[in-house]
Structures are given as structure tokens and as C-alpha cells.
Image 1 (cartoon, one colour):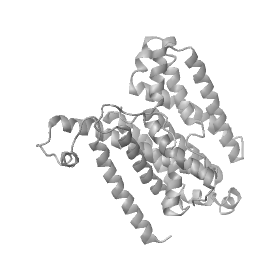
Image 2 (cartoon, helix red, strand yellow):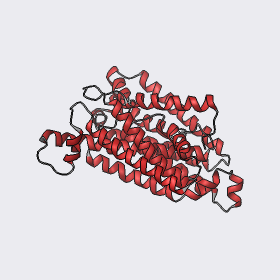
Image 3 (cartoon, one colour):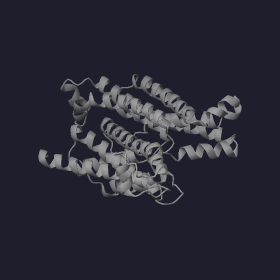
Image 4 (tube, helix red, strand yellow):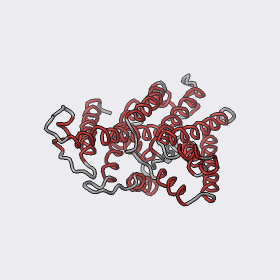
Length: 341
């Protein structure tokens, strides 16, 4: 692919990312002019004090959360599609998200069984994040242990799906014995949310997210060779076991921390890698990884902006918006049977 053309496309995407960041900060239940949003970042004292508070303590963290969530899920989806060489693989195929959901379900739906201290944790962001992280970690550990016993990559995919089914079954049993209030709280968590994080929580989110991104950078070259088949990659001296393990751990870290802090958010990780491949017309991960990062962030910002119902006090579930965006792309892939890279 032409290097000049690639640079131009990245420049356009970066400009779009900045534009949708500002647009996302501008929209909400309180109407804040676009110009004032920009001026607020330069310390303009003429802007209303409550507007500055809304922008800096609520909307800006939410916008940054959207960028982390969209980019993290997109990169995880790309890793899974490469590892399994399956265009319909996504970041949740390993059952990590289901494990996180199980952790939250045990905390919320099982709170009444464990006493008042658990009930208090169930209503805190950190409590939910810790429960989700523990659930995701345990499922990741189980998948990694099983992955050491099987050589076939597809077997890992099937095992991940089975773990997902198992955790879903346990959640169903917990839900059956739960109260209406507990079910409602768990359902609201499962809708996904970007606007509940404080700056401290966002910092913790970013540190864990950064670990995942740094791990991805170490396996860019092996990922390119995996596309040509495991035997070919092995003949080129690629350490397949190490590459698989890092890919699985990275996906688990990114998917786990995103689900822990924002809930399970669908379709972004499945659809965005295909958009990146269509736009750049390449399978080179040196291009696809940053492309998926930027496009995923843009799509998540657009989805969140739509979910805000601008100038309205209502907010739609973010999962509903991402599914409305992602499902048509997946259907198009299945029906059109086009090769997008």
C-alpha cells in the first residue's frame, strides 16, 4: 500500500477523532456551546462555573473512557480474528467478559446471601470493578491452563465459548433466586456505561489498559506471520506458544478491565477490525493496530454521542447503540461473503 496514502488516511482519522472528542464533550443533558467547550480547556474565566465543572469532572472523563473502551475492544477483536483466523471472532470469545459478568452477578445477585458488607460493595463502582476483575481473571486463568494442554487453536476457541456458556448458566441460576431490585441493578450494569468513572478510577483503568497495549507491541511481527498459517510461522522461527500466550493474556487484560469498569459492550471488537481492513486494504498489523485503535475510539465516541440524546435528560443504553452499528456490518460480512483484507 502507498505510504503517502496511508499517512493521509491516518491524518484524516486523527482529525476526526479530535472532532468527535469535542463533539462528545459538547453534547449532553445540559446544552454547552461548542465554542465554550474549546475555550474551557484554555482556562477562559468567562465560561459559567457549572459548565466548567460538567466538562472537566463528568464529560471529559466519559470521553476518555469512550476512547479507551473503543480502542481496547477493537484491538482485542483484531487479535482474536488473527489468532483464530476467523473473521467472526471477537474479544469476548474466550469467555473473559462472561467471567466478569459472573463476578458482578455474584456480588449483586448474591449480596443478600453474603450480608450487609457485600450489599454496600454492590453499590460502589470499585466494588463492581473488583468483582468483575476477579471473575475475568479466574476465567482467563482457567482458559490459559487448558490452552497449555491443547495444541489446536480452534480447541481454545471452543473451550472459551464453553466457559462462557457455563458462567451464563450460573448467572441464570443466581437470577432465578434474586429479588427484583437486584435483577434491575444487574441489568443496568449489563447495559454498559461510560459515565460513572471518577478521575482516580479512570487512572487505574488507564494503567491496566496500558499494560495490555505494551504487550501487543511486542508481538506485531509474529501476528503478521500467523496470518499465513501456524506451520509457516513456525518455519520462520516464530515462537508460537509465546505468541499465543501473549495474545490471550493481552485480550484478557483489555477485555477484562473494560468489562470491569464499563460493563459488557458488544459488537465494537467484532466490527471495527473489518472497517480498518476495508479502509486501509491491508493485513499488516503495523497499520491495522493503530488503525483499529483510532477507528474504535471514533465509533465509540459517535455511539456515546448518539446515546446521550443531545439536549435531553435521557440516556440510551450504550450497548443498544453499538449493536445497532455492529450488527449490520456482521450481517453484511455473512451475506456479502466479501474478503475485506
